[in-house]
Amino acid sequence: MKVHVDADVCGGFGTCVSKAPTVFELTDAGYAVVLLPDVPEELEAAVHEAVVLCPTQAISITPSDE
Image (cartoon, rainbow, N blue to C red; front, top):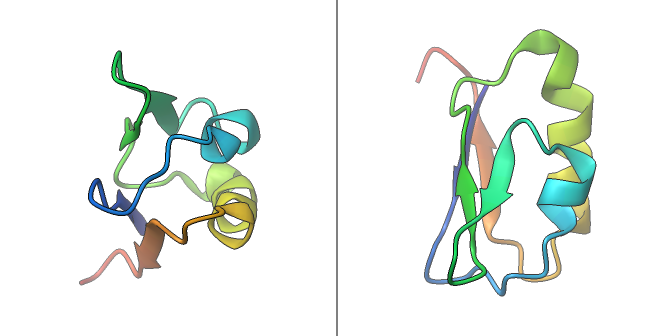
């Protein structure tokens, strides 16, 4: 699957980083960016949890074939 963070929606809460630190990080400005846009299978559950827990719903996922 692929993951994306909408920079216009991200509130910089860091929940995604706490759930999947190898997939997300916070910039110097405090907003999330994606480090691994093509999520490895072993990290998919953590990314799904980050999507559900994101307070601003800034994270989206799509199948890898899109």
